[in-house]
Image (cartoon, rainbow, N blue to C red; front, side, top):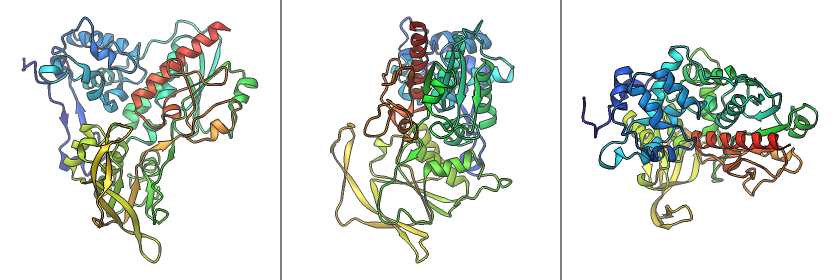
Length: 462
């Protein structure tokens, strides 16, 4: 038995090796490691870890089953709260949520809750274990827009309650941001994402791809002509933001959204796929969130020298500490306290460099982070041939602009009640990035659960 104050380490690919491939970086626990880590859980009577989980998984409950070697029971306990455990075990910011509240973490390392969840989900897949479906259908039809984490969670919860659920997905492949946004080396598509979607379908959920709500069919038509009694909008936030600086329209400038979509959904990283992408020998990624890390680490694997340009210091980087650590290990260069002022081009309008100005941190702004202030006369240039903008995204206004009576705020985010996802339009619920703007997978899942609860109450009150 190891020191209970120290978590069981997780095996990873060597940084030098993984920087050249798209295989998963983290290798996860085996059975013995998972059981040994589970012993570190104190089984608190009032578990703060559950309060830190946006979908309220019974964490002590499933970890107790791991201790005993009852992995199937552990999977079913997680399944009562989460439709996507193999995803969450990999991409949740556990350090600020469940693990951030763990009592073990006060005097030592928090219990490795995320890695244990991942182990259970992977074990269940390898052993053909599926979630338990509803005993019987209730005859009510519900439409869900978007097959990302919010939509899949809402659909899975409603299906367990007995509803007849159809998900409408605009792209040719289900999964939303899980399929197009998060790289293969962090979230394998066939092994993890596709398998979790199949689990949701095993509950009776139907998924129709290539259906663009607002073009193919409107929400009003779904409600009035297609026989759906309620709709949940989980369409995400796919509209990228830009800086509006000189040179931003040049060849070789793109959003992280486009860059990652081409790589993930369209397999641009594979030699046997004919998807064009600006590979770039020297790449600048502007931004400091998880998406910026994903874009930078992808560009590195495609053979580029990569710079992350971020206007605050490392302490303010919004990306997960694990992602920053992995990026540094792999060789991504961080140009911190810098902000781009111009993208430089040649006479054919191809990117040749990026001009930046150095920053210092002033007083805190509305977000509580210290506001970056320019240092006059500190401009400098970095020679690059590709610039990837990773400045966040906002919802595409197509759905809100084609739905009568659906209120949005000034950022074009749908206005919805946090507890139940109720919008201004009767029978229409919403959650995830379509409501909050770009956020995390697990927060979108929490919103999906809230929407399912709201729809269930709405149908029962009719």
